[in-house]
Length: 448
Ligand code: ATP
Ligand code: MG
Image (tube, rainbow, N blue to C red; front, side):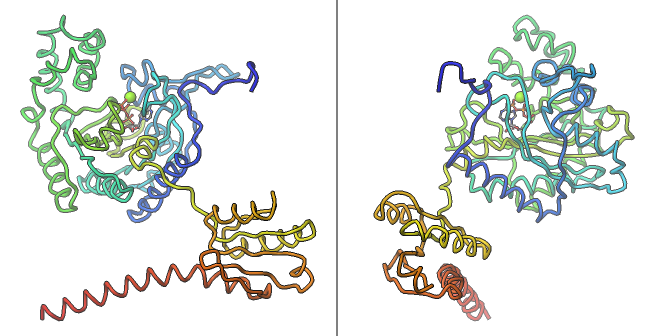
């Protein structure tokens, strides 16, 4: 690398090896689980007109006021790299007539961009998995969405993370609460952080979300939403919590949880590592891994009809940090040509096996010993060896790398041999499953 090799942009990451595997595991788990809940896949543009975000997320939020990557394109239009998914999906819902599919359950994932101070778990390009239910006013939608989030986190094997749940009430409850908060914080205005002094006039709920220590003590004894909840808003929240209990999703009430965006109503939530847990240790202070809520007011802010909706997003990097290192998968089969003439044949054999869905690596570099060592290290269960004798006879040497047993096989029998190897593992798994079933049947018999 010379001095004039360009560096990566601050706050971006080049993800490789075990970290890339953990990242992929998060995405694969999300893809698998979202199908269990029947969420449909959408692909969204990475940039939108700036107003899509400014009008929906709110001009006074951190995201819109300080964090957006906005620029003028060559036609003089103000565009913004998406800082979140929801606003773009809401725009698409309106401009594509997706109303006809309501209630619409959609899921997506990809990169987002925010101009933030980079630190552990906080980047300028980061990635989210995202799920939204649009056109559903029922609390059951909130429950289904949260149950899916909970299942994804469980299936990732992440422990020590809890759902923190709050309600912001309906528009009236929220307005009354807001007025009480302004009164509370105005009394101590001079002691608040500069940011919060500004929020006091523009967006007082956001003070509750402040990470500044000077604000924390006043947040603790601020008025709580519960005193201001209308009967309807209270019934809605009760339906959400009893639904979560029925689904077996553990939650805790977080009375000052507000979320950093303007468009939320009713349910608001975050999944946060428990204090002192392994997860909290790994993530440090950047600890929210998944956040979301109900955004019944958002469609109107984009000029659409009132449309109830609820959604969440989770940072893939933060989830991947909790998942930890995941080993890159090994090869199933190694192909080792010995001598230049064997290389063409090796290409043919490898292609044949890959067409049959086996993962195959060809080891054609270095001396013979090196080739075998590398084949061993690749995790392959068997090596297919092609030397001069094999070229002459048309057969191949099939070597079981675990036992060292080796025999000549016809090309036609190669796939069968490879399948036998793979099935050995599957049979072991099936045996275990059968044992478990037998045990279940036995214990049922004992009960009768
Ligand atoms: P924070 O309070 O940490 O700034 P946020 O409220 O801005 O989070 P959301 O907009 O709700 O976050 O995004 C949902 C999730 O996306 C977060 O919980 C986090 O996991 C992830 N996330 C948000 N910003 C970043 C970032 N800059 N880098 C990495 N992940 C991020
Ligand atoms: Mg943020």
